[in-house]
Image: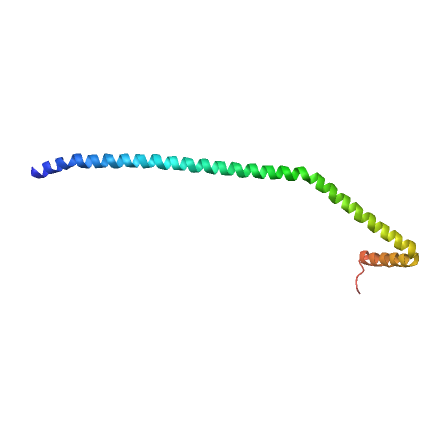
Length: 119
């Protein structure tokens, strides 16, 4: 019977230890949940800020795109006009050379497009 009484005496101590451990586990679970909630909240804030920044940049680029397109079009027109003016001046200054160059160019393009096969 001495063994049983010793076991009965240690039973409250073990029960108290188990209850204390369970209480600590519950407390740790609560702390971990709080930390996880904070981390999720911070991740949401960071993602929202990144999205807002990207959306603002996209809007900014969309707003300036028509202006940039107009500038490129104007530059292309200017280059085309300058090229046309140079060709016109060359033809007026040297009409025979321009005629010869045109004929030669026509011959080369015709030869390339004819698809001639070698015998």
